[in-house]
Image (cartoon, rainbow, N blue to C red; front, side):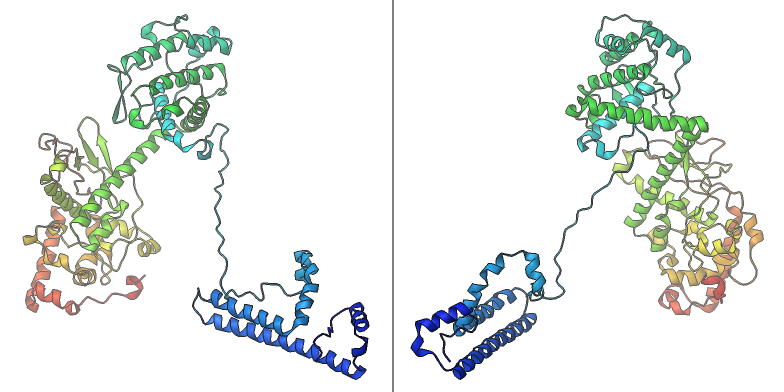
Length: 610
């Protein structure tokens, strides 16, 4: 084949070659043969290249990652080099196609296969795209509301200190304190003295300005003693100089007390005077050590723009909502504060008991009960007595109350050996002789059936009886006073597995609930109604409980004779059960080793497994 012949050349190139070599012009038949041979050669080369590419991709799919790219590049380069050497026409043709690469990318892909089809990337491998969630701020509920994104994070501690300062000025020293409206006489006196904002600013900046009140008429910081004021459980040292400065500032404004008018616009002259007075005194205290415990940022304390926003948020948004709530329903804020305080005390009591059970490796059935907040009673401080009164949970059984009383005795004994606990004040909780019912009525769900009071259980609907208690398990000994004893006196059945424990005491413990046979002990459970729970939920080792006992409350850890009658009944049942064990000639150790020997009375599946 004539190598110099180019089948893909333009007609002009053909004529030129003919003119240059007129004597070597082949016959017509020979030209046609050469033309066909060139086409066949080109097609065969392209077919070989395609086969080589397919074989390379197949080998790469069976190779580990990391080597595929390196091995893939070698055959492809070799195949291209071989093709170009064997086919010079192809090399010349590629030079002819160079201008076409300058066209737009979209047009090139439109006339040929997309490059992704021939990609050497293994199938199923997708490029990972990192997406960042954008936190969208919730819309403002009030124009004066200050959201988290409206201020830098470094302003948080300063904002908290500002709120504390406003509460002290306002006299809202307790959680249930509610802002009051100013007296009409005070509003009239203020607007008679001040007509323009410039007059208010001059009175604040000038220490020799006219005073309108006698020094003893200013009630602001009247509870301060030696420059100290009590806020909650903390004592804030304001300093005598600051107290005199703040009282003098209030005197120059003619204000007896610091009391903004929440029914006026925040930009009113009266409210503006209170805002300037609050922020000015706050900046004075920020330069001292009064609010050091709040980690105040001195730089942020000088940012007046943020201080004004924080002031309006607290006074004209948070306190305004509290003020409106009190106007709609008197005592609502006090009720909510009491509920919040009791819930917090209840949660702390749960944490103490649960942690004690985990550390001392109590049986898991005990730990599951103690982990529920609803399993613990709420308490309320008795003013002037130095202890807390235990309230009666209506849904907790008397036997469960025995267990909690026993638990508190064990915790007291453990605390007596703890030198660290002796240095800390622990709350004393005492049971009143006349039961006081708890405000919490919703019982926890999923606890063993013997945790719940039988009378309370029978008052539930059928769906609630199957949904609230766990009617397939037990947790307490028939007499819970025998629980948690020292190791030498420990009841052997406490170490049984939950399933074995349930099978052994099922007939004894579930009879009052009507889960054994057709008869129910509802008459016996009726006598239990109205009796208080028996528990002592905390011990204060720094106080003597003997001297604090009176006619209204039982001694700490004492339940009196509230459970004597029921205890006798349980003792009879235990004696009967013990006689059955003696007849069978089996000891507790033998029964522990062979749980399958415990036979339980047949339980209707429609009642037991619901």
